[in-house]
Image (cartoon, helix red, strand yellow):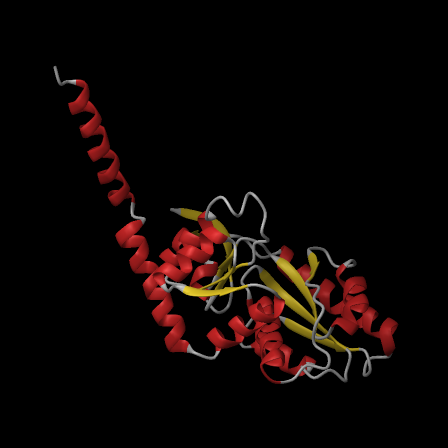
Length: 262
């Protein structure tokens, strides 16, 4: 199956053609918002991080913001930095530039304060928008689309306890298992029982336990692989439609035989 999309310099395809404006730290968000509002197709990718972070926390921020900019739905990116953040705007700029897409950078402490930065950022973003208006869509295969499960290491189901979530397991849990992804789930009884029975993830109750579970799985590739495979095997053996079909067919045969007895 084919669709019309935009092919990026790195070969990936997007279904949107946004000009993404990404602050490298939340302190630069207002300037980034003012820039995005003046760009045709501009989208502000707002976030609350980037300052005072260290270690794994800082690494997660760097990886996440870079991945946002590298996403094929972003045709071009304007990075907006403050100038004193731990995750430097230059690092974000270089990480996105590797894809070959157009990237610009403005830094508040280097480009004339907030207003100087906004003016420069708008000029860069509007030029990107002008270039993208002329870019035609091309025919692409559906199989080329980025699937979030393919680029995820861990899948999280942070449901709050309530009558709905205590009554069954959400369909996306089974999607994650079929995708061989380890799970981190809140302790709603149905998903807690599922995860513990098949050893396909970690269960938490409370914010601190959730953070610990994320750190634990992130640091242990073998555990992620083992739990992901356990979940996949559980789907094949116990939640496969062929298994359900066999059970239902057997039940029907029993009922039918009973009705036909004299």
